[in-house]
Length: 300
Image 1 (cartoon, rainbow, N blue to C red):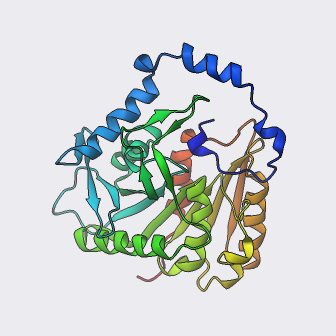
Image 2 (tube, one colour; image 1 turned 90 degrees about the vertical axis):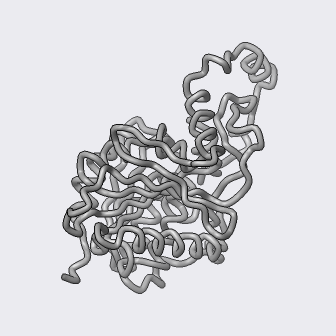
């Protein structure tokens, strides 16, 4: 489990922080960062974000960075688009976990780019607010990978809502001839999944056809009195919650299920056996074909 994926578990106790400092010091001395494949891939994605042209092309299409007016950005991936194609492309917006990065999720951590070609949809990878490490991603003394102090704000989400508004408007304007406004989907992982509960309440079914909350749920160790409440949702939407029986956020995922069901959302939950708090890449195609594509706005 990467520390960038982990965000203050429900069952947090002091024993969680019992650390053998000698063990971790020895680990740091013995590890070989130069031959660390995951770290090298992370540095590669970070380098793309530092180029003048922040873009990447592959057999899967074109991936590029869009800067906002608030010193933030997001990463867009478009599969190869036929200019004369009818307006039919869904959009998936993906939000990363704590201390992670949009470029890394786009090119390494997920397979959404590959699936976008197979199923013909657009993908945007959001970038949380905060500060990147000046010299790029690193492993800490415990071996965990991080890109900086990067997060989605759970208790005071106004700035992140403004950011998401900018992202949505950009995509609607740029892909006006291709984008299917009836099939815009949202997925958040870990810290991004906790934020997805805010998205469900604030935007709901008036913006998103369906939402996936992966290893986050509702609440965590935040002050729930300061959070947007599922009971205040204006337009309910279908929600798929994905967690594991060993996920520290399983209980907050179960809480999310109960609260959003009480708010008249259609909620399904999948608790995977022998899974902890990590990103379940092998579930992506199921999420797309068996959940997202089953739902669209009935406005036609």
